[in-house]
Length: 158
Image (cartoon, rainbow, N blue to C red):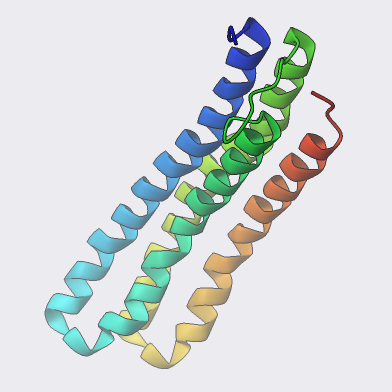
């Protein structure tokens, strides 16, 4: 089957849904890891607590991957490919935008909050729960973006 322009546009949506949140998560996990390394150098026993904070910005990459898989399955790329009109391909690209854009930005912002939480844990380890909650609040918007992408995808006929 010849891959038409509609399919190319839709695949671009899948790629962006995976790539942009993945970049945000990689930057975010790296930022928190850098911050946590200084604390662990001084107090290795805090490693487990800090690892939780470091993992938080990585979830946006997982959400983007999930959205990418949903698009790939919708397009039949794991089995029999289907014909996709330019209009449907553009709709799929648009549906990918919430998780692509919000996933990228929220991972970076969440990393900044989690890195600040590393400072909290360094000085007051008993306040770990508060540091996690503050960072997790940013996660809410990534979850909402993923939900929006899923709902939009479900409304598209290809």
